Amino acid sequence: MPENARDSNATSLDRNDDAPEWTDEMFEHAELAIGGKVIRPATGYLGPNGVVKGRPPLRDRAKQQVTLRLDPDVLAKFREDGPGWQGRINAALRAASGI
Image (cartoon, rainbow, N blue to C red; front, side, top):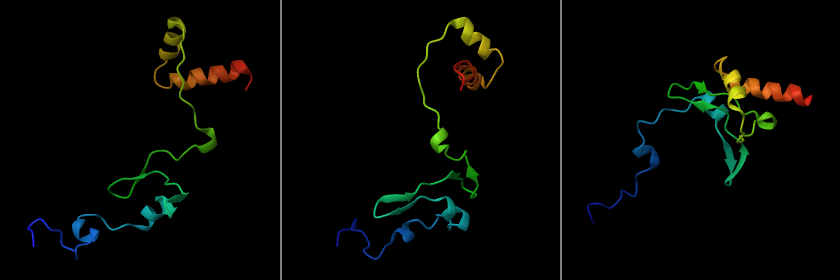
């Protein structure tokens, strides 16, 4: 038998002995798929300690990325107030459009 032949009795569990045991919380946030079709998408990211990281999906409220050209003085005015300037531009556009 060749030296590089795989052990036919080896399982993925044998090769991943350092993988942590799944907790109930990990199963709650995992993607559920049957026959390759996603039944329930994953929610959040489980870090090494089982901590859920990131915000939940926004689904129907998800924002779209666009490219927008603004006058330098308009952009400077929003940026001078620091982080969150993109959200303030969004709020100003909503107010101006009556949404």
